[in-house]
Amino acid sequence: MILREIGKTILPFIQVFGVYVILFGHISPGGGFAGGTILGASLILSKIIDSEHRFTRRLSFKLLLRTATICIMTYGIVKGYSFITGGSHIDAPHLPKGVAGNILSGGYILPLNIAVGIIVAITIYIFYNLFSEGEF
Image 1 (spheres, rainbow, N blue to C red):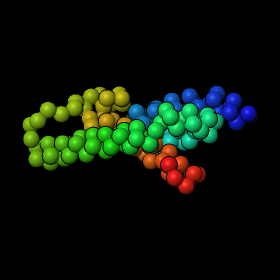
Image 2: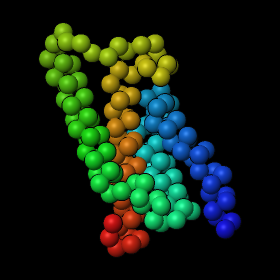
Image 3: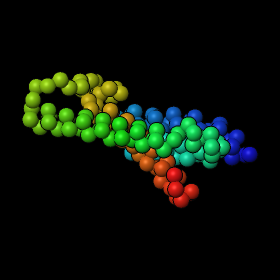
Image 4: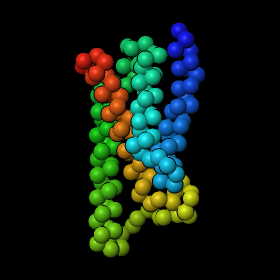
């Protein structure tokens, strides 16, 4: 009961901090992997404090797999586009660099960090389920 009440209180702060680390990772310490681990830990805590069946219905394996697949494809497309246009000096549309220190100042780094953060969070959550239950 104590874990449940304290977990419900601090869970939103953990998730907001994870999103902050992902979004500001290109201008401060952090990034997609660090923020993804924080979000993955918050998903694990949420599953521990919430009833197993309600949480599993909200985050089904099919939904997690579909989301991870979309993020991996997005990462591959954006990274491939940046390699092709940057390496070949092709004058194609690209994200503006912006003002240094602003959240939109990294070009393709921000969308790549978001994709990596979601992939890492889902992977950590799936690994937890595999190790705790023996199956998903």
